[in-house]
Length: 244
Image (cartoon, rainbow, N blue to C red):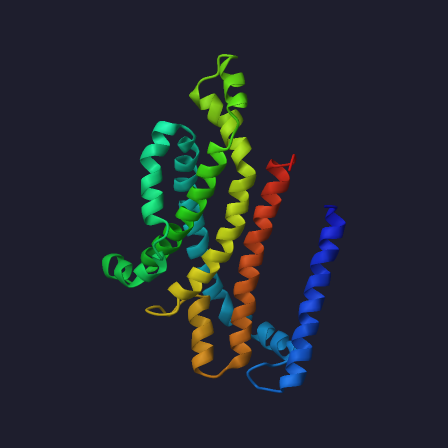
């Protein structure tokens, strides 16, 4: 897709969403649904209060994504070998269907109420999402490409570097896109109790005080955090997956 067209599409989608919001706020006339211009004004005034919470949330989610990627991608890619996959697959089938988010109280008991427990929860959930995608992508690489490279004297590391990883990268980046939405959702849940920092705390605190303008300011900030991470993934795809 042409870059200029994509930018215009983003602006058009943003305009349509603001228009829908404006119409809805005009129809319902409820303090729980203020107009976009009121929220924008409140958002600008709330920036000094939101920035510390944004910094904490960004740290938690970025750290979690890095840990998940660093552990899930290598483990998923080596699963292209049947012998290794026969060991890894049973663990995936047994552990992936578990709703890991319900483990947060137990994780807090073990790791405390600090950042470690929240980062561990987010990275654990993302780990399985990325692992499953990386494993499936690696196992779908045609043996023809692997055997062709081996016939030229390539070693195991060369196969990973020149065949398995490049072929799996587009699907890994797709998994990252999905994981960003999951990470932001889990982040909100993880920051909803036993903490006084983060955007999740800021949103729920505003809700408990019926401060709807601040509530929407927090929601917008969390949406911008997710959107920024999504753009980073898109930039990486344009740079490293130009053939897609």
